[in-house]
Amino acid sequence: MINFETAAPVKLKGVGKGFWITLNPSHSEEILICEIDKLLKKLKHLAVNADVVLDVGDAKGHEDLIQRIKLYLKNNFELGLISTSPQKRSVPTERIRQRDLSKGWNQHRSEVLMLRGRVRSGQTINAKKHLVITGDVNPGADIIAGGDVIVLGKLSGNVHAGYPDKEDAMVFALGFNPSHVKIGSVSASGSESEVGISPEFASVENNKIIVKDYMKASPFRRMPWPEAI
Image: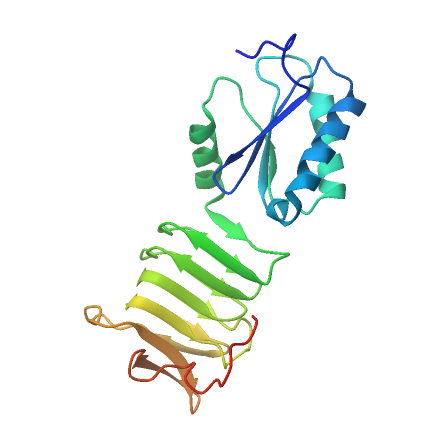
């Protein structure tokens, strides 16, 4: 239990891909907003797209205060999900529950979305441009990206790169075994064969999706110099 008589107005700590902000409601709303403002501005780009959980501990009757602070954060910072912590739940447990309830991530501000961990059946991942996943994509998952899709693990499920009509995009995976692949407006059913022994990528050639060995036919070999994406 937090002792608000001695606690600082605002405490911030990193949790997962975001931040947990503990508020001391015994201070005025003006002081709380001022302290939050200072902390988030110090973080600079680290706060962009970060999820934030607001916590008042065991204090009761501060719903209106929380809603006003949430509105302030939404209007003044480029944050991700802003939520309130239910009482008597640990930080890790609550964040896991929030993630599983949403079963997906949507990227609106950053050009590249990077995720770490397994994408499970029933989850949908949407990226505005390129998508990088360090982990496996299970059967039954849906992956959609405006640019390239790069999976540093086994790729199963359905994948659509170059959404909606960018046919120069590619799909790469260390273990390439999707059930359905679509690049731009060109689509193909996946193979039921076992995953190959080397990384593979899919691209569009002559209006067909072709899968190649990445080490033998690197799609980036033709590029003379690195390009920012």
